[in-house]
Amino acid sequence: MSASTLTPVPALLARLSTELNDMAAEVNRLYPLAIATATPDPDYLQALQGIDHIEQKLRALAGFLADLTKAAAPDWQLDAQPALAALTLSDLATRLAGHTPHPAANDGDCELF
Image (cartoon, rainbow, N blue to C red):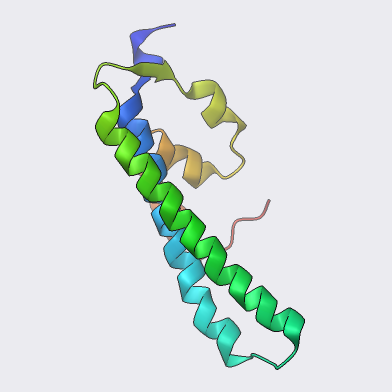
């Protein structure tokens, strides 16, 4: 394992925390759209509660990882390359690797998978 493939664990945990917070924000942005089309159907209302619960869990996991980031020794490192290679969303893998995604990855186009 070369030093160039090693990632500091605190940095990786911080990136994961950021991703989860970003996902929670995206879920939160969807919630008003779902409420606008709400029906009195109990299954629909339960689904709305599920959206809110997902957002809360994402934020809780982000906070948990942020706390772990503070507790992790700065010299802890691991080779994240195999795990990053398994990610199917290239922009996510790029951010978790600590790089800035290519601008085209964030231009509003959908990513086909």
